[in-house]
Length: 300
Image (tube, rainbow, N blue to C red; front, side, top):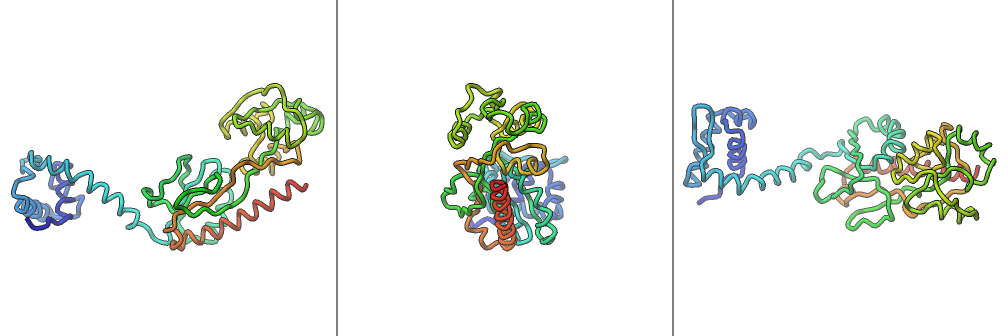
C-alpha cells in the first residue's frame, strides 16, 4: 500500500468526529464534493470503507472506528505540537509569572514597556505552576522565585527578596507609634517558615511567646496587616506600593534577606526571539531600579 497522505487522515478524523460531510467541509474550507472524493481515495488506498453515507450525515464503519481510535490522538498531539511554531513570531511574546509578582511588581511597570514597544504583543500568564518549556512551547520565559537552579534553562538573577515588619497606620497609632513598644510586644502574624525566628535573631531580640494568627498565604498575610489585624513580616517586593503609599508602615530599618531571589528563566530557544530580547533588556533595567530603591529604603 502506498503511503497515505497525512492530510487525508486528518480530514477523515474531522469528518468522523462531526458525523457530517457538509460541516466537515466547512471546517476544512473545502467543497463537499472535494472532501467526498478525498474520502473515496482514502478508502481505496486502505482497502476498506471508513464512512457510510446516510441521508443525514455519515456513520463511521467498524474499520473506520478502529482507524480513528489508532490515529486520532496522535494527530491531535501533532496539531498541538506544531501550533505554537505556526503562531510564533518576534512580535508575539508570552511570559509566565507568579500572581503576586504579576499584580504587585510587573503590571504597575508595564506602561513604560508598552509605550516604548507598541509593536510587541505581550501576553502574561499568571500561574503558580512551574512551566514545562519542552511541552508549553508557546511560553517564551517565566519570572520565578528560587535559588537559580533550573536544569536545562537559562536563569538570570533579577533581584533579592527582603522581609520587613510592617503594619497599618491604625495599628501603629494603637501601639503608640513605631517606637512605642518593643516589636515582640506587638500582635504579630506568624508564618510557617520560621522567618520571625531569623528576624529576631538579626535584631538581637527575643521572639514572642505566641502569634495572633498563623497565615501561610502571602496574599492573606499582607491583607491581614492592611486590616490592622497584626504585624506582617512582609515581602518588600509584594508590599512596595503599599509602603510607598503609606497604607503600610515599615516598623524597623532592618531588613531580612530571604533564602531565595527573583529570576528570569527561559529556554535556550528564546535567545533568538527578538521580542523576548527586547523585554529582557527592559526587565533587567527595571530590576536595577527596584534594587536601588530597596537600598535607599534600607539607608533611610
